[in-house]
Length: 484
Ligand code: NAD
Image (cartoon, rainbow, N blue to C red; front, side, top):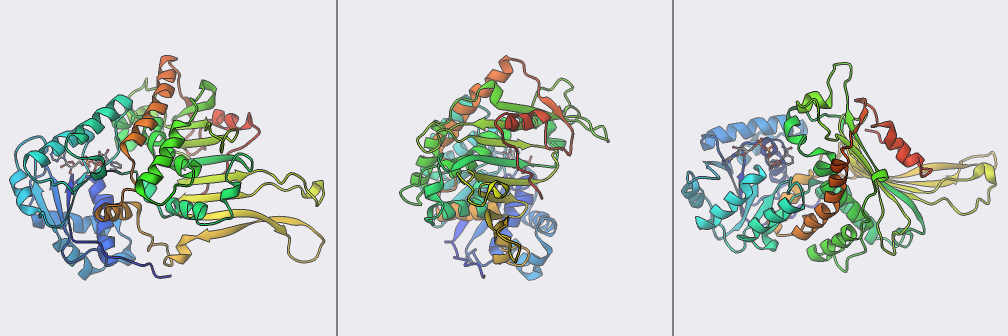
């Protein structure tokens, strides 16, 4: 299948923090892939703005190296890379000072789509927004893209929203959650709302429970001191897992339109019950054969921050009353794998006798490493031997449909950046969604802090602390094994 590429309008994309890790690893390689796919018009320009003293040639060389490192070899086309790099320019700028702003103004055009990507620390969002206005660079229709973390609690998220709102209206603000840019996540909406098959069953009457797992094999590494102020709940659950939960649980929006979708997501967050102390398990990886432990990575021998969390959530509405949602995420786990699994109830009666009692259907939506969906169904075991049943997966792997190695699937970042240029906010978080998620998260964190709870230790390379298994076993359920 050849993917259909619709070129976007001419644009100026200014990347503040254009020399940073995120820009080099994700943003620029993603833009190159869109260029290679023919989505970038002749008149598109990318202007990097960062603190380092550098000229255009220096920046192009830096990004040439980033493309060599972070783009699949099969996509590295020498002449395309050369042409792409010619689109790039660099302005040395001080977000909190005066230097570089006149040069940036001169480099941007008012008659094309303008987007400003804030790929810098959140403390710089305010100064950047302010200066873009003060210096007469931002216009009424331009867009800003902001990265996580969007606050560390409700108060700071509100303050950040208020700061941005002084200079930009909500329709101009694109809060990125790259999980929403994944092919499968969008496909989840297509599967739910484009078929008659699933939606009638998508409720507490037919769904036993739902599991969302985002497992990483890496530890916090060099980001230890930053991560230690955050932890798995703030870093992963409040944003990524919450967004996935919303898409799974929301009512059908009246149309596939940014506000209609986000209104429905918001209702889910607002319907979440408070989490009781016995409904979550926090973990921290502790020492392995190299002696590396979370506390060593975080450089704090007393740290109580969790590198793993598992939770049981309930949504109090007609659709989901009685169906638990189990979420878990952690670092230094056995596999790097993320999936959402909808576990349907068992058939009420087995006509094939007790020995053939079947387990329910499972729809597994895999987010990484390979995106795709499988639906477990029960069929008759082929061939002679009577009526014996087997469970088989109906596989909907996108890799087969989109290029032999799946390399034609646009990366989440490149898809989302193109949505910014198109002016489509559907896959971006609205300010009230972010605040509602923090309003739900804050009391859970405050609770364990007040109680001085210590995270349970777990071995690197495991599936997390034993207590996370018990959380499930208590309900007569078990975590699915997620594989790479
Ligand atoms: P980084 O430290 O690697 O890069 C920071 C960038 O900001 C550099 O280009 C630097 O020159 C620029 N900068 C710093 N101070 C400046 C100033 N006063 N004026 C102008 N420019 C200044 O950071 P990063 O890892 O690229 O992260 C950028 C943002 O993206 C952060 O908010 C981070 O939380 C978020 N984020 C990063 C990742 C990731 O994988 N790196 C993932 C998700 C979110």
